[in-house]
Length: 326
Image 1 (tube, rainbow, N blue to C red):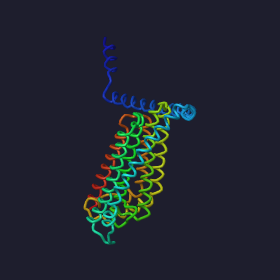
Image 2: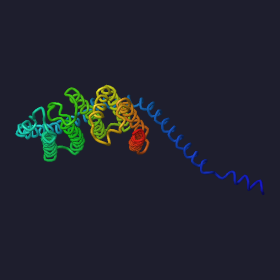
Image 3: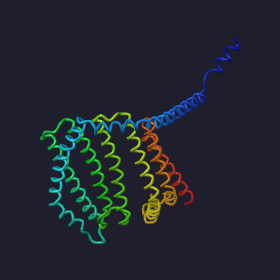
Image 4: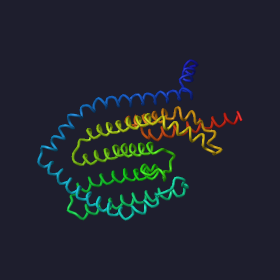
């Protein structure tokens, strides 16, 4: 009885053993998820023949070919009407926007903000008119239900991309450096705006294009393969731009650190951020894509929260260190 009672006592898990078991289970779950991801990548290669066969059927079958032609004609007519309406609405406001943007070299921040808001308002107003007129033509015209669904995907994509493009244009002012709200030269501002719009367009238009083709019978396995491939390309382009601009961004961070007069910002490790900031950002972008591709629940949010907390802790340690030296 004494031996049995002692064996039972040793068999009871301690708090440390329970924590180790939890960590071990979490690691095994992550390893299994990564293994499933590799199996999914290998299985995705098999979707290429299915995609080719589906595309050939869309072009060779008379019914599907007529369906594509009908959808393209009806949606294209509505889009052209929306474009014409947006151009006509932009014309009378262009002179007012250009007058506000014609600023002297030495301009106060308030005037720059006013000119940027005018540019943003004109672009968003033209976009709103385009979306409203296109949707109205689709509803009042003799368009099919499928056409309206696909056009809804297209309009949503256009609204997202053009809205973000209008905000970027208002902040970076690639065509008018006198109203620019960010301390960048003309070449840097044009490059950032062009690549931001291009990458956003690729991601958003590609996503909604796949969603629209899914309504026309694209197999869901092929859609999943193309979606992962699309965002893999987008992630690679984002990381490429981060490293292409690392010199300019590092110089800009150092300039901000030297010219800042705030009592708080003087404790920031500007040299360290300038030297390693692009590496941190590139690793974060790659990690966000990986946790999304593997399918970790709320993985991107957890990574972002971890990055913010880590930076806050490092900032606190840096502040404490400078305070001790002072």
